[in-house]
Length: 233
Image (cartoon, rainbow, N blue to C red; front, side, top):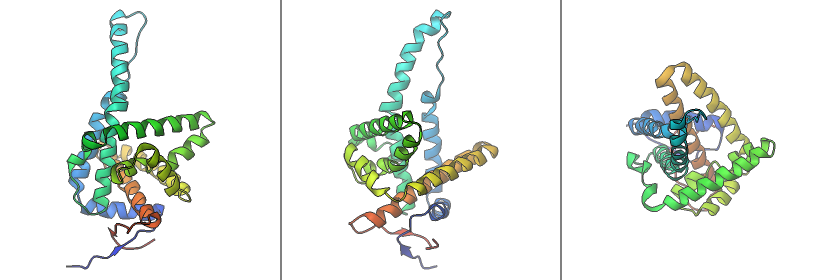
């Protein structure tokens, strides 16, 4: 059997996408595929476009309850699933056991942390975008690691925000660059129809999880968690 080399991946755009693709296609491909499909299906109620016509009383009667449900669903349920999805991808990138149950683990012990962390991040990003867009992009980039820190390190919401801000110092352009690459991957996935977009989403999730782990290895005072691959960056 070919020997396997453990190392600490250097934070980079190419290294993150390269390692993510190799690991995603070799390890836990099916659980990651199912996770993306499940989250995509569960995301449906939030993406629904509820419209009220002032001349249609039936629609008006149902509009407000449906709007309230959609907001509650989007802030009190969906973030727990999405945070769980990020943790599942992180486990896969670490070559650890990746099970679909991680999608729902947040409901057991981290529910309030996830809800509050998500609200804080959303509020800060919105405030940033109101301030001429660029601050919103900066805030989004600097708080990208919040979900991983809540799920992986069990940090409190504000601790996760502060830690993410500290961890991403010096890596903001990498994160922004990965977002740009992700956009074009999504476009390519759409061109390749249904299967293509799912693979693109998987690749992007895996790449951001890889970047988090590589930055964690570099910044953490604790012993870094090694990840498997070939150091090519």
